[in-house]
Image (cartoon, rainbow over all chains, first blue to last red):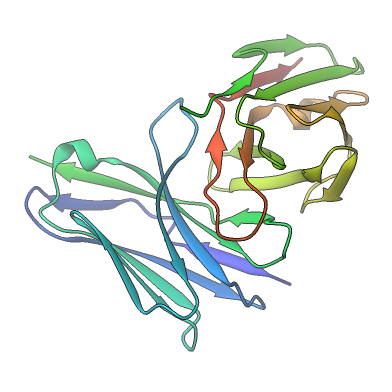
Length: 112
Length: 113
């Protein structure tokens, strides 16, 4: 069956370091991969989208990679700050209609 | 700004009740989604609609139905609420196609007692 997996364990890092979150998928050939941020008690907010023919995408301190051979995306936050603490979700879409499937999310905690 | 509004922030219902969760978006989006979110399980897709009166089952449609009579409104219906449907329900909308971001509502915390 189709599966999207993110690290279920929380990631704790020190302020100023680079946070790296992983999204793996199986039995799925997504055309697009998206990353969202979710704060407690709120709906997810879109951060970045990367296409299957793109290797890397950047936006300010954020960087996303997409390796369709490894079936993996990495999400990096450089120079992390306590305000980056949140749950980060990856999502995949393939069907022409835009159906969007999410992973379970990884919680990031950045300590001052 | 795109706005996705869910009718209730918190809801408490009794087992066996028919429950309606309403979602309205104001950006003329073709796609609308209903997810539920439980600890450790992430967002699981219940139903997806890509046009008025068009719907597609997600990963966990059992016990739920949906209605989309107008483009801006997407309703989730729990035919007979059960305690295992206690969860956070999130509605989202997006433009048609695969490359568009989804905009989420604030969520409805439903408790079935």
